[in-house]
Image 1: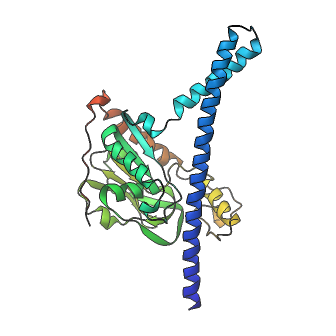
Image 2: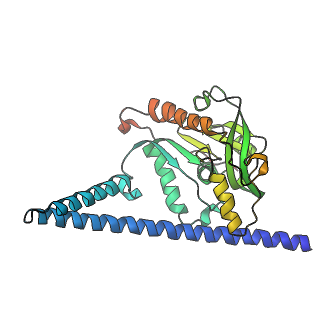
Image 3: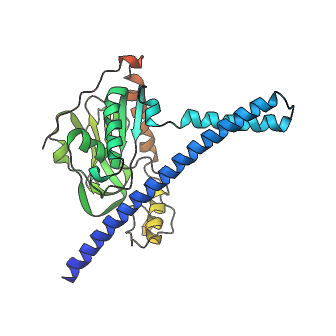
Length: 305
């Protein structure tokens, strides 16, 4: 009974913590969105006032200040857009990243409806989309009805992978065996993916499970790991969870001799670069129509139980 109670407490604590993380990230994103909006308004106001004042006052300092705020305003307006601002545009490629909400049912995530709208939009307005980590699970669930499964313990570390389709363009140049980071509490099953004829499993790990799934069309890719991680990302996650009292296990195959003070070996950098280079070259560049107005809508797949 004590063991069962301990397990229940641990599961409950994980759910509560994950929900709290979700709330905090939502608050942080909302805060920075408001900051950007305020900066846009402030920069626009100062720029306009400065330009008008320059007609009447010949001050070098005023001109410099006006120029700086004009540059800030231009930067924000150029690189930070809401979905409503770009939804009528078409794009060569898009990357959807993960979020620390994987222990929550997809439908309970606050922004699930918005994410579904973006994933739907990607099939008509984006040639090739790459989903990473939680986004890969969300994409497979939304497009194909493929469920996720909660792991007994967090999967964290550097794992060896093998290639199942070596002639696929995304896998060109990869070694027969290569390493990639994973950091997640949930997983997907290969048998669920194999039910769908228009999906290909490109790479798997004996320890980490499925790593790369591709639509045969090349329009959607699902990466369950974190090829984009830097050398110390897993270490920072481990130290963060340690400070929070979560008693995390050491990431597997990461710290030399499992010494948490040692500098981790960067064993996945070349294949990470190759993964993104192949995607950009073969799918975002070579196969994308010259005129994006000719982009063909990707038909919505049939979900299977």
